[in-house]
Length: 327
Image 1 (cartoon, helix red, strand yellow):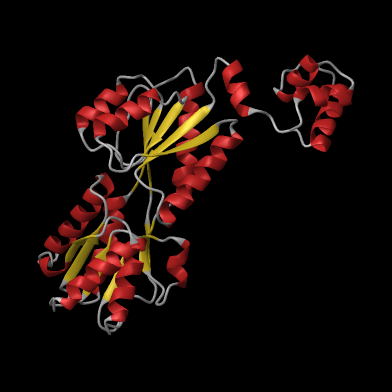
Image 2 (cartoon, rainbow, N blue to C red; image 1 turned 180 degrees about the vertical axis):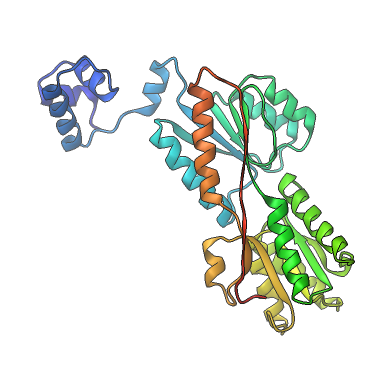
């Protein structure tokens, strides 16, 4: 492995000069700076980030705390967040805290040693959130509307996104609308509330015969829907899935049981992940600005870490309804 000493020897300069150049300390002449960078690139020098962290009094890692990495949603969100954190000079660590008690999750976040934390779908208990806030650690929540000192949140307009989708189904003549949902979290709560409110406004009631929890997973949705169909459930006119991954499993299960989409049942999802446009049939869904959420989360956590103003804020990103061939 090429070391900083190798770069200094090859460039004919002191080790301290190489260190100043690589850390953007503006005390080196432009001629020497260019020479050091050219030699470092030619030799393939890679900074030892662990050593840099140990030598630096300033933490330079941002932690992303989530229950899972499964599904398109997390892939898109994490990728954009990581890219933006890296652009700002921060390492990016992912902590998967599935099936861990909330008090332990708080302990993990608080003892992680990161400069700031991005948290999604992890804490439902207010006492856990309050305890986490008491650490005075920069935090950005992606699953609730909350702000205060050291704390910001970035959310999407779950309610109006689902409301527009269910309103559309009803306008298309659908009266029996089933519902499948994922994790028990703030996003799911708002989506379900919008579903119920839309039905009530149109004088309809929820369709209990087709109400399933599928934990945001395509395979679980496939298995649960298949099980329900084998029981001879009364079929609805349409089914709303509160994320696309479940929607894909739902459509596959319907098709494998001889039920055609949308001829027999209309299906609507939520997120508008890339696969939605290419599924068979292409999935009608609510577009969620997932990549933008990752960008905004990274930008805000970096601001909270570096700014003298530690007062947080809440930002809601708009959703939109995308009609395709599954309705």
